[in-house]
Image 1 (cartoon, rainbow, N blue to C red):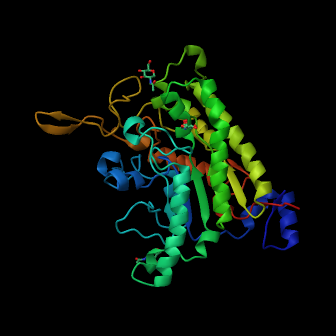
Image 2 (cartoon, rainbow, N blue to C red; image 1 turned 60 degrees about the horizontal axis):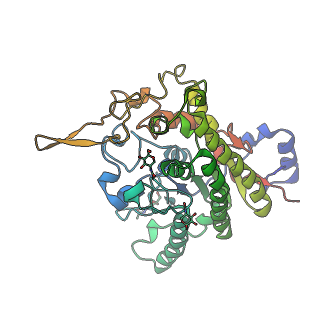
Image 3 (cartoon, protein in one colour; image 1 turned 45 degrees about the vertical axis):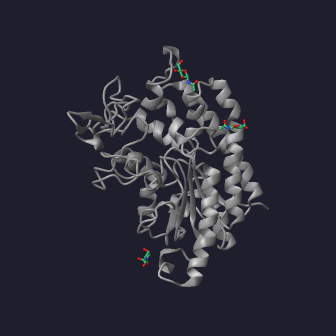
Length: 388
Ligand SMILES: *[C@@H]1O[C@H](CO)[C@@H](O)[C@H](O)[C@H]1NC(C)=O
Ligand SMILES: *[C@@H]1O[C@H](CO)[C@@H](O)[C@H](O)[C@H]1NC(C)=O
Ligand SMILES: *[C@@H]1O[C@H](CO)[C@@H](O)[C@H](O)[C@H]1NC(C)=O
């Protein structure tokens, strides 16, 4: 049952009878967002760590007109979340230059996993900033920002007031790389599935820690249909009987669905363990799959055709991804370029979605249509489960 807190009883009982009426309730007015994730929501952390090679042009060209730390031609779902909440785009915690954290911080990095990987980023491409490290950074940020505000120096107004930590929205979009890390090690589907419960358990551990620190509103994206992305379709061995009617690698999507089922079960359990939390589970898988299914109808054409890339079946070459250059006659030449009109494609670089696709997905999820419970983003502090 859904309970609306800080409201008279009759309002909450009406809500149970007519869930649609939540749209008439006041919005949460989140003053800040703290985000945890991977490249689906990194707004510049990997670039802050490794510079331009971490995110070369033409990334960012359509909206920011230069690389903006995002693996996209423009904005990510997390940017549309910030815009809709009336907040500035989130700054990466790791960005040390001219950064204003008064409305939150972003701990996501390109290549992040939930579990620590036993390889370096130089070997496997996975980021050392796994979810447990992102939590440590958040915890450090919380303590340090309090000290800085107390000191009252010139940095004071770049830090969130302490009260914002309990009224902020905590967003999560992570897990896809934990699955692909297993495929990269040539593990079987069964071997990858076998470690999913451990991945989910580490995911929920982090949510519990943020709750213990005072976080209350959680907006959690499940993992997308990775088997519909060229970087899986082009690099993994996929037989004809493993392809679904859209052309996606269903065996790999099956592991994502298994991850999502385990995540959903854990969140149901978490709601009883964390009675003051409002936890919204967002079915990003279904939203992305629906976009791919309707691609032609929506004017995006072939959903698998990569905008920024070179060669191969999908305009994707894993060894020469978006932004790859070559030295020709002593000059560096961009060879994996952007397409004419990124807004006419779903897939940006074989791994990530274009801004146009991200906007479409955000418009689908923001009203609660893909959420459990079905509350809109701006109401995501209200869906506390009644523990009575
Ligand atoms: C890394 O190695 C340790 C020790 O062998 C193991 O317990 C852990 O599961 C490994 N992590 C991953 C992501 O494979
Ligand atoms: C940081 O951003 C907040 C909110 O947008 C603003 O009120 C504050 O003045 C900014 N701080 C600085 C030092 O610019
Ligand atoms: C996985 O298999 C491929 C193809 O057999 C091989 O080239 C690659 O080195 C293997 N990777 C690992 C991590 O064992």
